[in-house]
Image 1 (cartoon, rainbow, N blue to C red):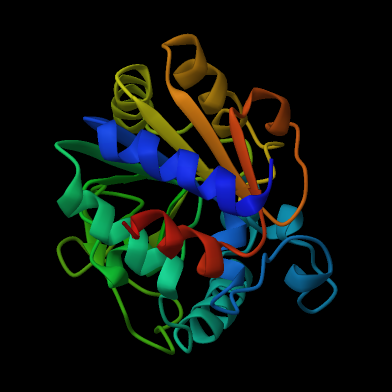
Image 2 (image 1 turned 180 degrees about the vertical axis):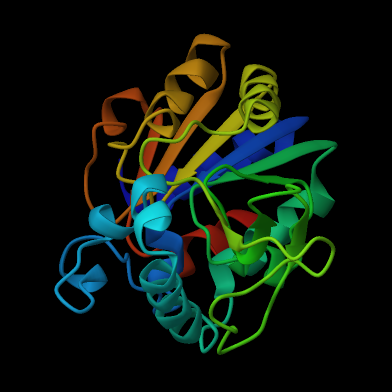
Length: 243
């Protein structure tokens, strides 16, 4: 089946849908120029992301970890939502029940206008106090190192789910509920390798959802998909909203 006919079929499914869930990964933000921060893109002062994004690294040297996050924040601050982010935000207004689940921490979905979403790995523009647990937005670039809580003076940490930490139970429950009620589930720009998000497509499929994968390449999720669109998210996702 060609891309044009597949697009038409997906549009038909969306036009009949009452409940839509979208899962996004690094591919949608790559179209805005956001690095993955893993592998070669994330190498900083000879440290890998896996060496710094851990509770142990923060306990050992919070200044080093915050210097790395400040570098990431400075890079992300120059990026803007692309047409795929904007199309996902528009879907929120179109469908009776809609939920966005993103693995990205860059905040670009919020910048595009998405409000019904779970940022399951956190948000780089949010900080959390290590003492009183208060969470607040901080858009300072550069951020003060070391940043302190305005309420209790405790050390702030990035509101990011680090390696070795569990995702928030509320996010998991809300995501599972959205997936289980989906008529259509769009999986956009995610490798399908990182759990638990790698299992979300199967949850929706088992509940009877029509699964659409949008990615540059095939992934472990591809065998689940009822329809596959290969290409850039910024080019393909907006086409789904056309009549």
